[in-house]
Image (cartoon, rainbow, N blue to C red; front, side, top):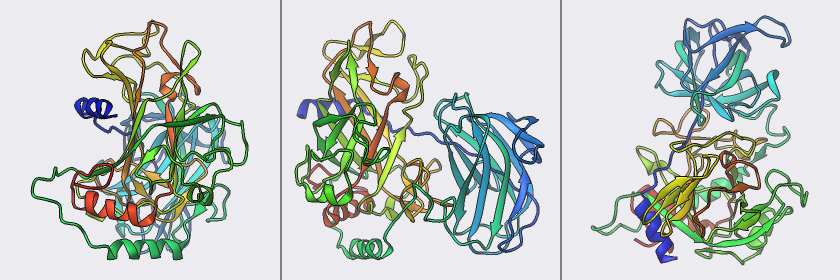
Length: 463
């Protein structure tokens, strides 16, 4: 483990995450009265195409939007103070992967009003309605920008037909209220008690020589493999592709928070972390290659991490997209890489995988979302309750700062010209799941001592 940790430190891997953005509005909103705005009614744009839609009501939509495209809407009346419910009618063929539609006020880099995660819907004219709620927002007429962000760069990922917004709505980011399928509410009593205990914890002052990096970690090894996924396919053993599980030894299709807390066996240190983590299994020439070491980092990418709070017990989320099947040539974001002496010395024949020098290690770093809606432990796509802090702060529909989690995996292979495969397909389909089950006190002290006061801590939570 020390050698691997040394490699990890030497690699200096930067956490890169992606995003997306889009939605639109114009005209005046009366309290609790929905107002629908056609997406093509923009005052200015970059990258927009307008086409005829077959969606209900006909008309036109704004088509084939990609990372960096934007739409501007002037004179959007956001009404008086209070919650603002925003909806976006979107479609995606999935060729550009999963992206995010983000509404910002004032400028392209202004405060986030609302954010939508866009997953493939089945086609460019297969329409679905996404919703989000802003608990606070600017009032009166505003300039609103819809900005697109996507991890696949310039690839088209979304069509937009319309946006609607309702001033004075009850704050809830779920499509049809918390009872909608797939949305899991946080228990307010338990969460408020956990928060109260966290805020009452004394902070252990960091020593003068502490490294001022907000971070602690769980140091893990591979646990077991199953074709199970208790987040995506709960209660359905064998329904998934093969996963390599890390952490709690009891993780399977029937895993719940209670079962995680009841099973003290884990492949991670510290022992109070009974969480389950998993990734698609890596294969070389048809033989599984399990990670020789995994470090699960808990840190912060925020400009000011002081407001970060712990994960509620039972919190779930997914990063990456198992359905994304596209080439990953050298220089691609979010790809496998080589760390250590000699580094990368070539590519596989198909160009999608690195070849590592004999002294180097095949690695992958996966970065999770770090802003939360504050209401749900999970969502239908396991992403819509969280978002990435692209501007260095959390806000809008995702106001709660949670630790920025990343998996750093080291595999005991250098690779060959034949490359590898994942249980989920191509290298681009790499993804990870996290089901959190920390002891509240152990996690709370680490968040307060290490993240809130910007001090690098070790696996034991010590400076």
